[in-house]
Length: 120
Image 1 (tube, helix red, strand yellow):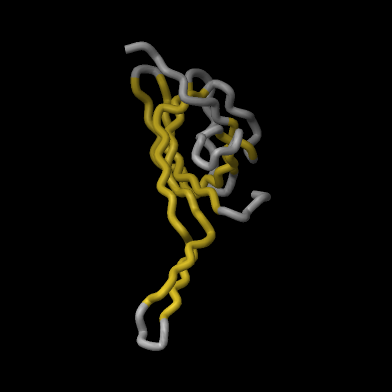
Image 2 (cartoon, helix red, strand yellow):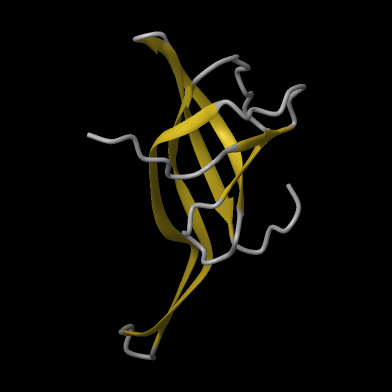
């Protein structure tokens, strides 16, 4: 199977910009952080409002050379295509296991992006 490149990840908030990593896995779930239901006088739900769209997921980076472990609270800029913009800034909420296989080091990151937050 031929190698496929899905995107380039740039990590901010650490002392080194990572340029030697490839994304091997990217998963995102989208939900609304704020759901409002309105009931009529009989107690029947007559409308719902969904607001504050939140994207949460995980991303796995495979380092080709060099290795800098990102920390929770920093950001990752990635063109994921999820929100339809050129690039999306994700908050790193958790740094998962780091492992080495066949000479490549991988790290799993939990990420989050919330509607309305323009500065991380």
